[in-house]
Amino acid sequence: MVMKKEEYREKAKETIDNIFAKIDDLEKKREKVSEDTKKRYDEIISDLKEQREELISRHNELQSASDEKWDEVKKAFSESAEYFKAGFSKLFSLFKDH
Image (tube, rainbow, N blue to C red; front, side):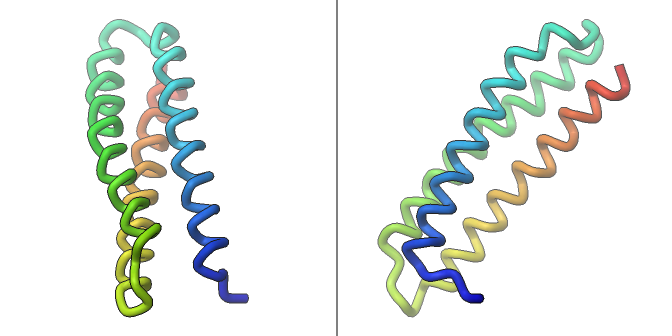
């Protein structure tokens, strides 16, 4: 089943909301890691926060994408969202390791 544009836009907004909530939650969990791990943790969180702006920009592009640009913009948004999944995996591994 192919997702319609409006459905995809709504799902993209949910993705952004979930990512922001996870970042906030992970910042609260920072205190649970050892001091030597906090530096790496802070680097990853900082990087994710920087990428958050790109994700918002990609989402804005989704809102106004023409039919000709839709697939390209959709792909760029998906790639940005995947970046966050990788970052979250790195952070969660810090909890497992320590």
